Image 1 (cartoon, rainbow, N blue to C red):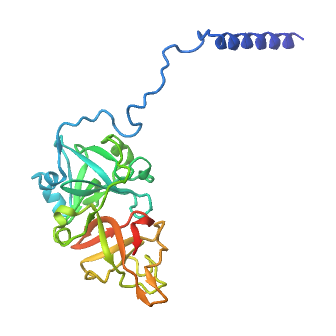
Image 2: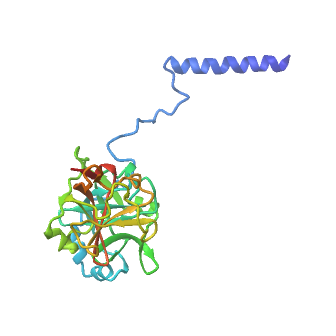
Image 3: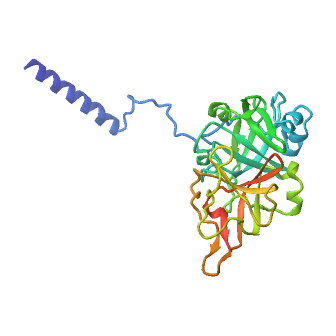
Length: 290
Protein backbone atom coordinates (compact mmCIF):
# COMPACT_ATOMS: atom_id res chain seq x y z
CA UNK A 1 0.00 0.00 0.00
CA UNK A 2 2.83 2.37 0.89
CA UNK A 3 4.48 1.56 -2.47
CA UNK A 4 1.34 2.49 -4.41
CA UNK A 5 1.07 5.74 -2.45
CA UNK A 6 4.71 6.57 -3.23
CA UNK A 7 4.27 5.94 -6.96
CA UNK A 8 1.17 8.10 -7.02
CA UNK A 9 3.03 11.01 -5.39
CA UNK A 10 5.92 10.69 -7.90
CA UNK A 11 3.53 10.68 -10.85
CA UNK A 12 1.80 13.82 -9.63
CA UNK A 13 5.17 15.55 -9.11
CA UNK A 14 6.41 14.76 -12.65
CA UNK A 15 3.09 15.85 -14.18
CA UNK A 16 3.25 19.15 -12.29
CA UNK A 17 6.83 19.78 -13.44
CA UNK A 18 6.00 19.14 -17.08
CA UNK A 19 2.90 21.30 -16.90
CA UNK A 20 4.94 24.15 -15.42
CA UNK A 21 7.37 23.92 -18.32
CA UNK A 22 4.61 24.02 -20.89
CA UNK A 23 3.16 27.04 -19.16
CA UNK A 24 6.41 28.95 -19.61
CA UNK A 25 8.47 27.86 -16.59
CA UNK A 26 11.65 26.49 -18.19
CA UNK A 27 13.71 26.53 -15.00
CA UNK A 28 14.42 22.81 -15.42
CA UNK A 29 16.09 23.43 -18.82
CA UNK A 30 19.32 25.12 -19.87
CA UNK A 31 18.58 28.78 -20.65
CA UNK A 32 21.84 29.03 -22.63
CA UNK A 33 20.73 26.66 -25.39
CA UNK A 34 20.81 28.25 -28.85
CA UNK A 35 19.67 26.99 -32.21
CA UNK A 36 22.62 25.68 -34.25
CA UNK A 37 23.96 28.10 -36.87
CA UNK A 38 23.86 27.09 -40.53
CA UNK A 39 26.41 29.71 -41.57
CA UNK A 40 29.25 27.18 -41.49
CA UNK A 41 29.56 23.76 -43.04
CA UNK A 42 29.32 20.77 -40.69
CA UNK A 43 32.12 19.18 -42.72
CA UNK A 44 35.83 19.87 -42.71
CA UNK A 45 37.80 22.50 -40.78
CA UNK A 46 36.11 25.89 -40.73
CA UNK A 47 39.11 27.54 -39.04
CA UNK A 48 41.19 27.35 -42.24
CA UNK A 49 41.92 30.84 -43.58
CA UNK A 50 42.42 32.01 -47.16
CA UNK A 51 45.96 33.32 -46.81
CA UNK A 52 48.86 31.57 -48.52
CA UNK A 53 46.83 30.31 -51.49
CA UNK A 54 48.80 29.24 -54.57
CA UNK A 55 47.76 27.66 -57.86
CA UNK A 56 48.14 24.01 -58.82
CA UNK A 57 50.69 25.06 -61.45
CA UNK A 58 52.75 26.81 -58.78
CA UNK A 59 52.53 23.71 -56.57
CA UNK A 60 53.77 21.45 -59.39
CA UNK A 61 56.71 23.78 -59.97
CA UNK A 62 57.54 24.25 -56.26
CA UNK A 63 61.24 23.41 -55.73
CA UNK A 64 60.47 21.44 -52.56
CA UNK A 65 57.93 19.09 -54.18
CA UNK A 66 58.44 18.87 -57.95
CA UNK A 67 60.91 15.98 -57.68
CA UNK A 68 58.53 13.87 -55.56
CA UNK A 69 55.80 14.42 -58.14
CA UNK A 70 57.95 13.66 -61.18
CA UNK A 71 59.72 10.63 -59.69
CA UNK A 72 56.73 8.74 -58.26
CA UNK A 73 57.77 9.49 -54.69
CA UNK A 74 56.23 11.30 -51.75
CA UNK A 75 57.15 14.37 -49.76
CA UNK A 76 55.71 15.92 -46.61
CA UNK A 77 54.44 19.45 -47.26
CA UNK A 78 56.11 21.68 -44.68
CA UNK A 79 55.28 25.05 -46.24
CA UNK A 80 52.15 26.86 -45.08
CA UNK A 81 50.48 26.89 -48.50
CA UNK A 82 46.92 26.23 -49.65
CA UNK A 83 44.92 25.54 -52.80
CA UNK A 84 41.53 26.97 -53.76
CA UNK A 85 39.96 24.45 -56.13
CA UNK A 86 36.72 22.89 -57.37
CA UNK A 87 35.75 19.23 -57.47
CA UNK A 88 35.92 17.85 -61.00
CA UNK A 89 35.18 14.22 -60.25
CA UNK A 90 34.11 12.15 -57.23
CA UNK A 91 33.08 8.60 -56.37
CA UNK A 92 29.37 9.04 -57.17
CA UNK A 93 29.41 6.26 -59.78
CA UNK A 94 31.96 4.00 -58.12
CA UNK A 95 34.64 4.50 -60.77
CA UNK A 96 36.88 6.75 -58.69
CA UNK A 97 37.47 4.58 -55.61
CA UNK A 98 38.31 6.46 -52.40
CA UNK A 99 39.63 9.40 -54.36
CA UNK A 100 38.41 12.53 -56.11
CA UNK A 101 39.81 15.07 -58.53
CA UNK A 102 40.08 18.83 -58.06
CA UNK A 103 41.19 21.62 -60.36
CA UNK A 104 41.71 25.33 -60.76
CA UNK A 105 42.36 27.39 -63.87
CA UNK A 106 45.98 26.17 -64.06
CA UNK A 107 45.67 22.40 -63.65
CA UNK A 108 44.29 19.47 -61.70
CA UNK A 109 45.27 16.80 -59.19
CA UNK A 110 43.89 13.73 -57.42
CA UNK A 111 43.22 13.55 -53.67
CA UNK A 112 43.32 10.05 -52.15
CA UNK A 113 41.29 9.54 -48.94
CA UNK A 114 40.53 6.24 -47.20
CA UNK A 115 36.81 6.97 -47.08
CA UNK A 116 33.76 5.97 -49.10
CA UNK A 117 30.85 8.23 -50.01
CA UNK A 118 33.02 11.28 -50.65
CA UNK A 119 30.39 12.60 -53.06
CA UNK A 120 28.09 13.16 -50.07
CA UNK A 121 29.90 16.40 -49.22
CA UNK A 122 32.18 16.87 -52.24
CA UNK A 123 29.69 17.34 -55.05
CA UNK A 124 30.80 18.10 -58.61
CA UNK A 125 31.70 21.78 -58.76
CA UNK A 126 32.01 22.23 -54.98
CA UNK A 127 34.66 24.79 -54.14
CA UNK A 128 37.07 24.15 -51.28
CA UNK A 129 40.32 25.29 -49.75
CA UNK A 130 42.93 22.61 -49.05
CA UNK A 131 45.56 23.37 -46.39
CA UNK A 132 48.57 21.44 -47.69
CA UNK A 133 50.90 21.70 -44.71
CA UNK A 134 51.01 18.31 -43.00
CA UNK A 135 49.84 16.34 -46.05
CA UNK A 136 52.02 14.32 -48.40
CA UNK A 137 52.39 15.07 -52.06
CA UNK A 138 53.61 12.74 -54.78
CA UNK A 139 52.68 11.42 -58.16
CA UNK A 140 53.08 8.98 -61.00
CA UNK A 141 54.94 10.81 -63.72
CA UNK A 142 52.74 13.73 -64.70
CA UNK A 143 49.91 12.72 -62.36
CA UNK A 144 50.08 14.76 -59.16
CA UNK A 145 48.39 13.35 -56.05
CA UNK A 146 47.80 14.29 -52.40
CA UNK A 147 47.63 11.55 -49.77
CA UNK A 148 49.91 9.62 -47.41
CA UNK A 149 53.13 7.59 -47.83
CA UNK A 150 52.64 4.09 -49.20
CA UNK A 151 55.51 1.78 -50.21
CA UNK A 152 57.71 4.75 -51.01
CA UNK A 153 55.04 6.31 -53.21
CA UNK A 154 51.73 8.03 -52.46
CA UNK A 155 48.58 6.35 -51.11
CA UNK A 156 45.40 7.21 -49.25
CA UNK A 157 45.38 9.45 -46.20
CA UNK A 158 43.05 8.75 -43.26
CA UNK A 159 39.64 10.41 -43.29
CA UNK A 160 40.43 12.14 -39.98
CA UNK A 161 43.60 13.69 -41.38
CA UNK A 162 41.74 14.84 -44.48
CA UNK A 163 38.90 16.30 -42.41
CA UNK A 164 41.30 18.70 -40.69
CA UNK A 165 42.83 19.92 -43.95
CA UNK A 166 39.92 21.21 -46.02
CA UNK A 167 37.25 23.87 -45.82
CA UNK A 168 34.15 24.08 -48.03
CA UNK A 169 33.66 27.57 -49.46
CA UNK A 170 31.33 29.18 -51.95
CA UNK A 171 28.46 27.45 -53.63
CA UNK A 172 28.02 24.76 -56.25
CA UNK A 173 27.26 25.85 -59.84
CA UNK A 174 23.83 24.59 -60.89
CA UNK A 175 25.36 23.10 -64.04
CA UNK A 176 28.26 21.55 -62.15
CA UNK A 177 31.82 21.91 -63.41
CA UNK A 178 31.95 22.11 -67.19
CA UNK A 179 34.58 19.94 -68.91
CA UNK A 180 37.16 21.30 -71.31
CA UNK A 181 37.44 19.86 -74.81
CA UNK A 182 40.19 17.26 -75.10
CA UNK A 183 42.03 19.01 -77.90
CA UNK A 184 45.53 18.37 -79.26
CA UNK A 185 46.74 21.05 -76.88
CA UNK A 186 45.46 19.06 -73.90
CA UNK A 187 46.68 15.76 -75.35
CA UNK A 188 50.24 17.04 -75.77
CA UNK A 189 50.50 18.82 -72.41
CA UNK A 190 49.85 16.31 -69.61
CA UNK A 191 51.93 18.30 -67.13
CA UNK A 192 49.31 21.06 -67.31
CA UNK A 193 46.04 19.20 -67.81
CA UNK A 194 46.43 15.98 -65.83
CA UNK A 195 43.64 15.60 -63.27
CA UNK A 196 41.22 17.95 -65.04
CA UNK A 197 37.70 17.22 -66.29
CA UNK A 198 37.66 16.78 -70.06
CA UNK A 199 35.32 15.87 -72.90
CA UNK A 200 36.16 13.60 -75.82
CA UNK A 201 33.83 14.45 -78.72
CA UNK A 202 32.66 12.22 -81.56
CA UNK A 203 34.71 9.13 -80.71
CA UNK A 204 34.04 5.41 -81.23
CA UNK A 205 35.09 2.40 -79.18
CA UNK A 206 37.44 0.01 -80.95
CA UNK A 207 35.78 -3.09 -79.36
CA UNK A 208 32.15 -2.05 -79.94
CA UNK A 209 30.18 -4.89 -81.54
CA UNK A 210 26.72 -4.68 -79.98
CA UNK A 211 27.63 -7.03 -77.12
CA UNK A 212 30.82 -5.84 -75.47
CA UNK A 213 30.42 -3.67 -72.38
CA UNK A 214 32.77 -1.15 -70.78
CA UNK A 215 34.33 -3.95 -68.72
CA UNK A 216 34.45 -6.73 -71.31
CA UNK A 217 38.15 -7.33 -71.66
CA UNK A 218 41.18 -8.17 -69.56
CA UNK A 219 41.43 -6.43 -66.20
CA UNK A 220 44.36 -4.12 -65.59
CA UNK A 221 45.57 -2.73 -62.28
CA UNK A 222 43.08 -4.36 -59.91
CA UNK A 223 39.57 -4.86 -61.30
CA UNK A 224 39.84 -2.13 -63.93
CA UNK A 225 39.36 -2.58 -67.67
CA UNK A 226 40.86 -0.33 -70.34
CA UNK A 227 38.86 0.28 -73.51
CA UNK A 228 40.56 1.84 -76.50
CA UNK A 229 39.14 4.25 -79.06
CA UNK A 230 39.47 4.28 -82.83
CA UNK A 231 40.51 7.91 -82.56
CA UNK A 232 43.68 7.33 -80.51
CA UNK A 233 46.60 4.93 -80.49
CA UNK A 234 46.27 2.11 -77.95
CA UNK A 235 49.38 3.23 -76.08
CA UNK A 236 48.29 6.88 -75.95
CA UNK A 237 44.76 6.90 -74.52
CA UNK A 238 42.27 4.50 -72.88
CA UNK A 239 38.88 4.76 -71.19
CA UNK A 240 39.38 3.11 -67.81
CA UNK A 241 36.42 1.59 -65.94
CA UNK A 242 36.22 -0.29 -62.65
CA UNK A 243 34.31 -3.57 -62.70
CA UNK A 244 32.53 -2.19 -59.61
CA UNK A 245 31.35 1.02 -61.31
CA UNK A 246 27.58 1.53 -61.42
CA UNK A 247 27.77 1.78 -65.22
CA UNK A 248 30.18 -1.14 -65.76
CA UNK A 249 27.57 -3.15 -67.72
CA UNK A 250 26.95 -0.35 -70.25
CA UNK A 251 27.17 -1.75 -73.79
CA UNK A 252 29.67 0.04 -76.04
CA UNK A 253 27.64 2.16 -78.52
CA UNK A 254 26.89 0.11 -81.65
CA UNK A 255 24.05 0.04 -84.18
CA UNK A 256 23.32 -3.67 -84.74
CA UNK A 257 20.86 -3.04 -87.59
CA UNK A 258 23.30 -0.93 -89.57
CA UNK A 259 26.28 -2.96 -88.29
CA UNK A 260 28.29 0.11 -87.43
CA UNK A 261 29.82 1.78 -84.40
CA UNK A 262 27.96 4.78 -83.04
CA UNK A 263 29.94 7.97 -82.29
CA UNK A 264 29.65 9.27 -78.76
CA UNK A 265 30.90 11.94 -76.38
CA UNK A 266 32.77 10.92 -73.23
CA UNK A 267 33.27 13.10 -70.17
CA UNK A 268 35.74 12.11 -67.49
CA UNK A 269 38.74 12.96 -65.35
CA UNK A 270 41.91 12.87 -67.46
CA UNK A 271 44.67 11.07 -65.57
CA UNK A 272 47.96 9.63 -66.79
CA UNK A 273 50.01 6.54 -66.10
CA UNK A 274 53.38 5.93 -67.74
CA UNK A 275 52.62 8.23 -70.64
CA UNK A 276 49.12 6.89 -71.38
CA UNK A 277 46.07 9.06 -70.84
CA UNK A 278 43.40 7.31 -68.75
CA UNK A 279 39.91 8.82 -68.94
CA UNK A 280 37.83 8.04 -65.84
CA UNK A 281 34.09 8.54 -66.32
CA UNK A 282 32.20 9.48 -63.15
CA UNK A 283 28.61 8.39 -63.86
CA UNK A 284 26.30 6.92 -66.49
CA UNK A 285 25.49 10.30 -68.07
CA UNK A 286 29.19 10.87 -68.85
CA UNK A 287 28.70 8.65 -71.91
CA UNK A 288 26.45 10.36 -74.48
CA UNK A 289 25.52 8.48 -77.66
CA UNK A 290 25.24 10.76 -80.70
